[in-house]
Length: 248
Image (cartoon, rainbow, N blue to C red; front, side):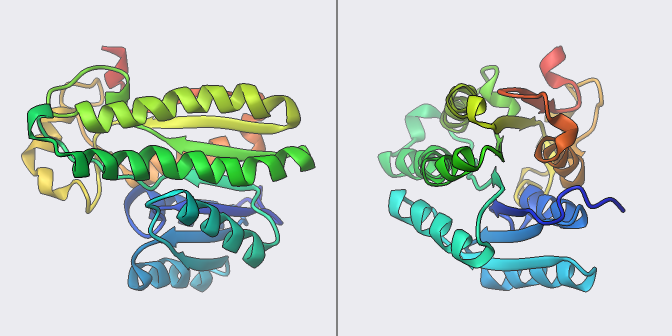
């Protein structure tokens, strides 16, 4: 076990399940004090307990990232608990697949509130502190369908396409002051959230060279790489973790 993140704190949104949970565990294994943010206290406490049982440090922060106030409040509570936030992982998101003509304004606003507005104002709140220290890391979680069109994914894909552009813009804005901003772009991943897709997940994954869905742990490893100094010369990058789907 290595401890590349000892003495550093990491805020992981959507950290109670799926990719977020795996990321919280991975960063804790590297020595970080992990702040697990999510809506479900039961699942949050389970993640914290799993980390502490292995000798790691973690705390749960209950949040419902619906607007600017919620994002700024979460950032403030994270700073109060850990002293500062060194690593921000913008993972929380929703991914409804629906036809454009079946999408309501409520659906639209909910997706953009969590997938775009929440990370935007978390960065607005936390990146200036990182820049003032001359050190910090932001990792955004996007999706392969932000890179190409797919039927039924206009709403979800477009929200994550916004995050791809924000990643590059934030790298330009904060990179010169020591803050590295990058993103990972997962393909089909087996999680509790995608279980409802059933065989459709395998069909989607079959189009990629890997020919299978990925695991949350595989995506978490990519996030951990971007969170550590192993990626010290990487700024504004989009790292596909999609089994090669973007290549074909």
